[in-house]
Amino acid sequence: MRALRDAEQWEDLLDAIDEDRLRRFRGEPSRRIPVSLPFASRDICAMPTSDDALQFQTMMPEIWRSDMSMESLEKVLQFSPIATIAQISPRPLCIIMNTGYEVIHPIEAVMKAYAEAAEPKRLVLLPYDQLGFYADEGQDAAMGAALGFLEDVLPVGSKAGGAVPRSRFAI
Amino acid sequence: MPERVEFVVDGTHVHADLYLPQDRKAGERRPAIVAGHGFSGVRDMLAPQGTYFSNAGYVTLAIDYRSFGTSGGAVRGEQFPERHMDDLSAGISYLQTRDEVEPDRIALWGTSFGGGVVLGAGARDRRARAVIA
Image (cartoon, rainbow over all chains, first blue to last red; front, side, top):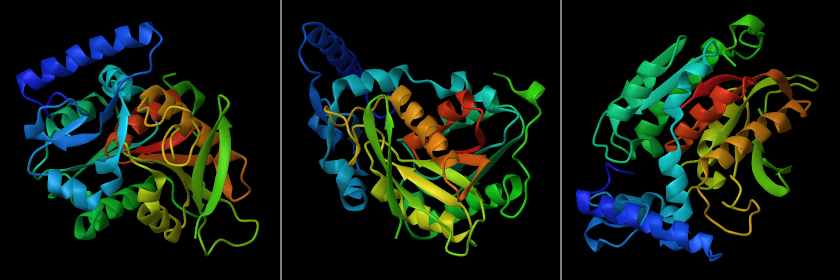
């Protein structure tokens, strides 16, 4: 969320979240906002986009057309899977990440999460842009990596991966 | 074509598509995957992945989080990660009731924001035997 905005847009978003909290306290519904708008519009939305706006429109028209509640952004900002990622262990984890142009999912945040995760874990880095996993060669590569991992840890026709010693669970 | 299924979480219907491997023999159980969609997405966008995983032998359940797609929820488009994690856990529970599924061999898979959601859900639901983000 932060990486998608300049400093002024970020402060505008935090102000809008504050206003929405008060609005809901008064018993009014959360404000509706567009999921995505061109970066230059400066209006509040979930995902300001710049040169990738056209990609969104063509590849994911459902998202481009949709709106959501302002309360959603409040909840998303509060969400921190990195805080609990270590608890996935001893069950196996695989993160598949693209290394090309990317502003929606900053690779620094993904690498930080991976570093926090405990073994067994696998990181697969693939040379595609942020929407590259949703079509053609990039989608094939990402799905191939996911399937390869599954075939290692939960292979069809085997019982592997089903039982985990009780004492090894973190929670 | 996937089988459309539904289950209830906290009083609200969750709709999902169940992709079954075509080569599964009668009575055979397979490992399974619960698939979560990305930011403001819908399960229909996961049709290629559902087909891919099921062709590889894995039962795959692609869900619409509550308030998205055709799932219930009076207010639409509520991107509430805690609720999404509960929906994924309910997806595991649903798969555990299916005769086609090995109930102790279920994985979570999610794309984009759904990747973050499966990381959170996998951390707190140990029935997820593997997590792919």
